[in-house]
Image (cartoon, rainbow, N blue to C red; front, top):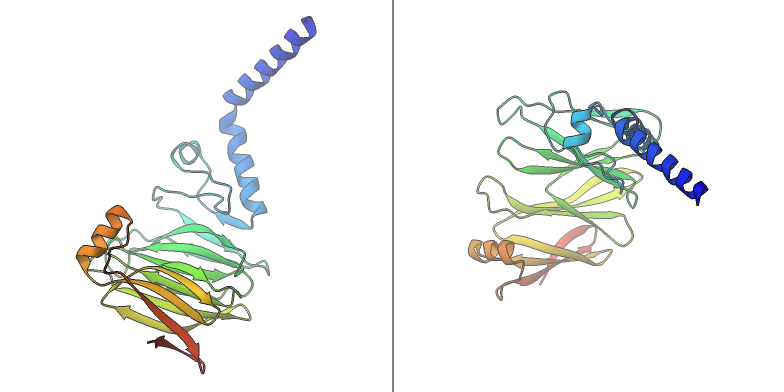
Length: 238
């Protein structure tokens, strides 16, 4: 019994010691994890960062939710080189840009980054880890079963943003846009029926789209649109 009490006392002392010194050892551990993931975010892991930002370890090593003036996103490529994306907080349509690291997508060996615009809109950025090739896309991505094509789409209630989608081919670690379309309807879901066929859920009216956003239930007016890849081009299947 005495040995158990001593053991518990030692555990309590160690626990209190770790709690008191967490400001010292927590940033070092998180920094080590970031480096092991080959992803560096230059903002220092200060007490403020640890307390006010979210630390996640499932392919999103560090997400800095608040906007820090000195924040950069630095991505390490397979050849050891780095790509740097610096935030610009200067007000204005052509100047304001804020990058946020989303994660690493192993299916296409690429980093995913979101780019916030001055009007509150958001653009998707893919950076291939092998080649460093990059491409800006409308929004959320869906990868084909063979991992050679990428579908990206966006639908918004904002009048300042265009609804639309893009289809990209990934070959030899480089992106090539095969199709990009602005829409007068709202694409709300999509899936790959095969490597060469896409099915997109379409909502035509603004009212139905807003209702879908609020309730996440497809309206009766929703329909399916199909695109197929034939003779090296995408066409709408009727």
